[in-house]
Length: 334
Ligand code: TRP
Image (cartoon, rainbow, N blue to C red; front, top):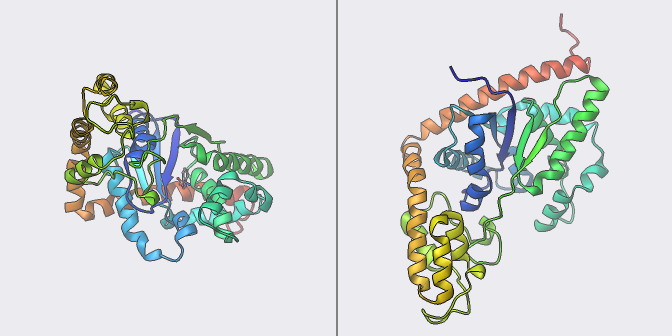
């Protein structure tokens, strides 16, 4: 028998495309470890994806499955983690409406992540759904009574907003929810292949978990290195080189030696990149192996999502029963 895990985790992503090495280093790797210790719920937040992609809803069905395959390939185990789809748990939408009465528009307007995302998307005016997505995220976190929310720093304002809502709800109507805490990942952001920005799909500088061996090799061979190295035996500066940063992240046993040889000009960029590409491909090999099974049997992925969603709904229904009871809107309950 598996030991009952005491604390519950909820975390997740908006499905907007393929996940990359930056996602792996920043969150997936951590989730794979946490699933052994905690009862883990993983939300594929398709409704939240619509807050910015409302004009392309037809993309969602593939994006949801893509993210699910990336999770499974990365080692998320559906026996340990409940993977589910946000829009298929209508109780989340219901809870969002109740929460929306106890959040002020000003709190949302001042949320720094909302502000910077609105700027990033060039919104002069925000939709009600976009401005309010932190409220919906509070419902994501609390419908399953989560205690811990592993996230990156940009999500802290949303967790703070969730805690405010929970305190207010519990005070006003009765104790229904635990106050969730953020588990902040302190992994350094992985740089993109351009060596200038963090790895990101929109900047076209990413290595995807689903890239083939050849794609990885090609991307690494084209990556920017130390601009001061023109000839193979020029002394290099590994600290400014993206390829070296990847050696540190994915080839830590050799990275000191590589830095030394780079500084001495005794390893050229081409050789250094070849070694990295080999390492990365070895690192991605088990993921490719697992992904193959799911690509060949897409119905397996759908079944995992359906079962996970069913389990999430059961939790949601239990919670909503309590919510209606403390709010005294269970009119016909005997
Ligand atoms: N906002 C998160 C992101 O953009 C995704 C998300 C949706 C989430 N619901 C959540 C994260 C609940 C943690 C908990 O990455």
